[in-house]
Image (cartoon, rainbow, N blue to C red; front, side, top):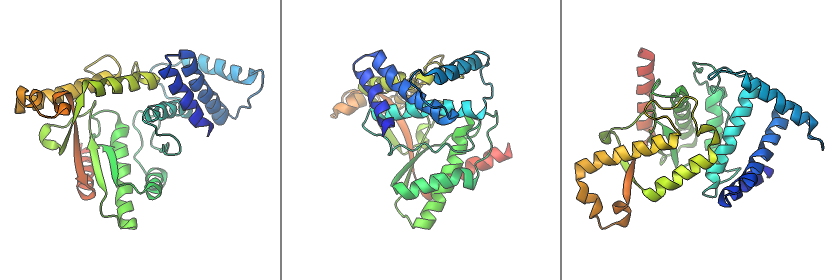
Length: 293
């Protein structure tokens, strides 16, 4: 698949500190996306593509932050984010077709995204679950209005698909991992799993983010606590969560621990591991809370 080669070339450029090689990988995918979305035909002189790029440059220069795009520009932006996600997964060897971009219909440019529907949003997730047969499903447990509204909408769509999946396939051992980070956070008593994060891990995650998520380096609508990339905010949250647990357990518990992994810990990730039944209760509670506002 040529799309995998685009990612490989991009990652080769990162490894070699070669911006030209990295940009070539990104440009190859961008050209494909232009042709796929706008129906352009690649020619030797690239005249048609150059015309389209000039039109897009003029369009973007005339836009204001938060402006609603037409459907093709919205799809083009989304396809750029898809490439970025493929590059992040490529860091650890995952690639297409093991990465699925579902392009769910409630992702719109509207200020208030529409509610998920079964045929448009739930069914694609259900079909993917039937294909993959997962043992673990992870999902953001963000209440509505705690950050991007799409996090809450994804939660509703995923839980609806999961409920249908376990009923249809008679699955008994599916586990849900609920996470929060930048926009909404767990308190220690709300979680079941705490994962230690070392400086090495923080450095790797920051390098992944800054190298691959080029569209998110300077967030258009950043978190209120920090003016910078979201990886900086994620690092801050992990360190703050470490500080809370260190206060409870004491400084020496970490730094005199027999495990090098614990001694190296400088941040913590909070997760809530749930059964499907517990996840459905959580999702319904958040939905009820949103509907009563």
